[in-house]
Length: 316
Image (tube, rainbow, N blue to C red):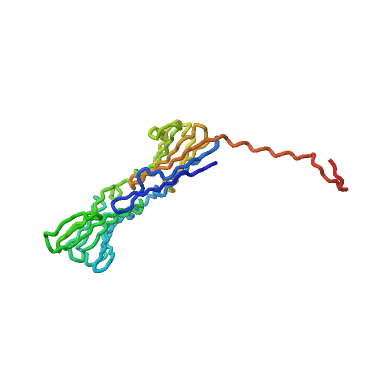
């Protein structure tokens, strides 16, 4: 079997100032595969990002935290607070890192329900000056999103304002007043009540030579919930195989048995994780060649070869 890797592409995308998941529909791999007629082909498609563990603690893999960077009187970085969903409303504990902020700094307890992670600061003091960063981490989906806001403090009500300085939003806030630093993200990724296993699907498509991508035939759909849909005539479906535990081990490879000339063409593995915002594609061009030649029979011994007699004379 000949196997050549044409290209491997890893394309990052971004949201505001932070890195996030790959671009939708990014082609991560393209291969040319060649197998002999009548053999069994395996088209490899692996992704650990699609592994579904059915972990009851997956909500604890989401966390929001606010950080503060000060540049005066000297540079310092401070964690203001963090919060994770927990197992229920009563478990959504906000952890403050400075006793001075108790009862004065908070984020809404409904943050993981409505997507509002804004930081509320009461009784603003000069010590609150600096650059605040709202960080959203989703460890299960390997997603990080962040946004920065600068806070300046003034004693004059006429100087209060909000503007964009080219890098971040700047709030000029009256000393002793209250402010809400906005951090709102209502993607289902960060909110409760999403049935994750209903939003994960892997499917394989096939394009015969000369067929456009939008005319490709669907071969199989596989859902993390356990549902499976196969398409095409029964005799063709019997040739295809996918791992039963694909979403457990992240192996979505397609096996095609008893290869025929009609199996050649372009195969594509599509992995969708709508909950995490993942869409990956892998493309394989399959060529079916002639069957391997049968092994040659062993050559018979050559009886005409000379040999030496016990007395040293050569006989034929």
